[in-house]
Each structure stands twice: as structure tokens, then as C-alpha cells.
Amino acid sequence: MSGPILDFPDQVPYDAYVHASTLHSLQQPLSKDPGEMSFLMVSQVMELWFGLACHELRETQRLLREDDVWGAIAPLRRIKLHLEGLVAAWNGLRWMTPSDFNRFRAQLGEASGFQSAMYRHLEFLLGLKNEALIRPFKRQADLYQDLTAALAAPSVWDDVTAMLARRGFEIPAEVTDRDHTREYEPSPQVERAWVEIYRDDRGDNPLYLLGEALTDVAEAFGDWRYKHLTAVQRTMGNKPGSGGSSGAAWLTRSLARVVFAELWSARTVI
Ligand code: HEM
Image (cartoon, rainbow, N blue to C red; front, side, top):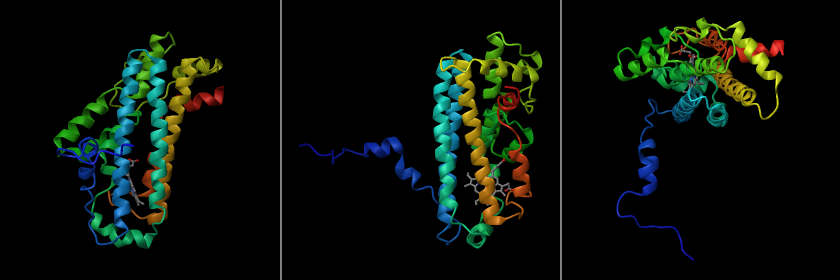
């Protein structure tokens, strides 16, 4: 019976692929409080999930641009599962009371998840555009360039509406030719297209399945935002945030921005 390979000429292949030693060298807490490590590592794990969701959304866009609707459903189904993992990661912080957080909060200074470039990228891909929110990155040229390009590029929803227009749905020019840097304005014609698509709810209607896969992603992303707000209320109540906002009140307003709006509003009509 053969056992695992125990001798390697140089670096262990697992480390060469996963870069585990690099990943484990990235935890540099700012305080001596043992609880801070959960806060730091949960944040790092979530950053990785944000990056993975962005990767899958870009793949969704590539397939939509090729009019491969069946193909685009696969990365959306993966994102839904990734987002479930991301949402479950909040459990790692549910032990934290306000006094636990206060033990290291001051050391964070002005650092805040609000300054997460990858989260902002994810929001832009999901169609939540807000030019003001890239200002914090002005002094980091590579991040700023990336986010400026993401702001000006079509979101997944823009690719969905363009694909619907190519398939003969009546989508007005103000939707297909819109300025992508602006926040998306929901359109009655796009809502009507989804009402029509949902009339045929058989399992072999790819547009209907696409609609449901997109709804799953929007819902799971909403779950992350809601859990974040709950974590904030649980650990700091209504205190202002380290990033300078009013905290829970600001996040509640941010949460009100709807992802894939017409997929939700169409349900009132269906
Ligand atoms: C209990 C722990 C946490 C607290 C108390 C907290 C607090 C806050 C607050 C108050 C804000 C509003 C902006 C500000 O003024 O700072 C914010 C934004 C944000 N935080 Fe957290 N946060 C926590 C955990 C996390 C974790 C683990 C992540 C993961 C990376 C994260 C990511 C974000 C993001 C992406 C935003 C921007 C949200 C938006 O633009 O709508 N937060 N956080």
C-alpha cells in the first residue's frame, strides 16, 4: 500500500499553489487583545470572497456578451454558493459585545471596511454605482484606476438589459446607451420584459432561470449587507463609524439601494 509523498526537491507543491505560508503571514493585529484576530481574519476571509464574487460576475458578463444565457447561469449559481459562505463568515464575530470591540477599536484609527476597494468593485459589478465612493482611493493609483474603469464599465445588469434588447425585448435607448458611471434608474420597459419572461416558468426557459439565478445573487448579497448592519448594531449600537459615517444609520441608507431592481418590482405585477 502506498502512502502520501513525503519528500519534495524544493517547495511543497501545496504551498507553491495555495501560497498558504504567504496567507498565514498576513495577520498583523494592532492590539494585544486576543479577540482582534477574529475581527482581522474574518475581514481578510471576506475580502477573498468579495474577490471571488467579482471574478464570477466578470465571467457572467463575458458569457452574456456572447449571448450564452445557459452558460451565464453557471457562474451565477456558483456566486450564490460563495455568497452563502461569505454570509456564514459573520458567525465568527457573533461573540463580540460592545466592550469586546472597545478593547481594540481605537487602534483601528480611521480604518473601515468602507475603504474596501474589492467590495466597491463588487457593488459596481452588481450595478450599485456611486462615483463619490471611489474618492478614498485617489492616492493609490492602481486601485483608483481599477475602480474608475469599473465605474465606467457596464454592470452585470447592463449586460442583462443589452442581451434582452438583442433578443427583441423593447428596451429603450436610455437604458442600453446610458452613462454607466451613473446610478442605474429602474425602467418600466425592463420590468415589463421580466414580467413577460416569467410567464413561461418552465425549467427549459433559460431567461426565466437566468432571472432566478440573478435573484438568488441579489438576495444573498442583501443577506451579507443585512448581517453586516446587525453586526454593527450588536457591537457599537448607533455610534459613528471609524470611516467617518454616522454608522448604522448610514448603512441602513446604503442597504436601501436595490440590486437588479426590476427583477424585484416585476413580482408585484406577475
Ligand atoms: C462588528 C464588526 C464591524 C463593525 C462594527 C463594522 C462597522 C462598519 C461601519 C460603521 C461602517 C460604515 C462606514 C464607517 O463609517 O466606517 C462599515 C462599512 C463597511 N464595512 Fe464594516 N464593520 C464590521 C465588520 C466588517 C467586516 C468583517 C467587513 C468585511 C470586510 C466589513 C466591511 C465593510 C464594508 C464593505 C463597508 C462599506 C459598506 C457600504 O458601502 O455599504 N465590515 N462597517
